[in-house]
Image (cartoon, rainbow, N blue to C red; front, side):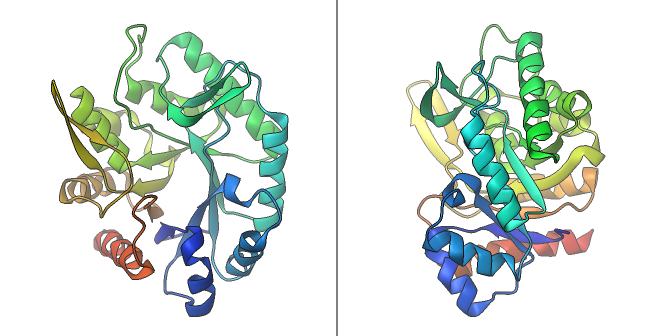
Length: 271
């Protein structure tokens, strides 16, 4: 069972992890990178023999009105059977329309119709996989005028309606709150703490536009001091949860990722 802190494991660090066996609680990988036989899947099998794993997907497109992609589901089921992850997750987003796929995690209109569709897709996915999945809250940069449900209430409703768990991304909360003038306490007060089974931390980038500054959740740098502060607040509200540090662009040396995870572990150990 996953405990304590982990890091997002990317291809450039696979062999180093095999060779050095770093002192870390667990690893999370992007599911779609390990759907097919290649040297990387062989490397991950070696790592899975020694560390707990989590599979984090970006391709289920659960918020789309398209039917679920059955081949994608089967590929995910095969990966689960192969690597035996403790946790499996995807996003509160959509990325396909009329069977055309977009290379992004797009925001949803928060309406009852959208909620019904999303929870139905989650239930279909869990029935096919034969296990629970986790859903991660989004980072977003625009809102739909059609939305009638606050984002945090939409997100918090998912477990009771679908049986899923929640992956609480603290950086995403911080980014979305800044971009939309949300309040982080609204998120934290809406969520049943027992529904949160994993936490994500990451870095963001500031971007200056004509009408002001926005934050971009690009996972390109260390966790900011503001997000560390929010993480402490999260832990005080929901208790210790398995925590992952993500880093997906400008990926640094493995030692830097391990150092970030150690910082998270220090906060967890204070609880």
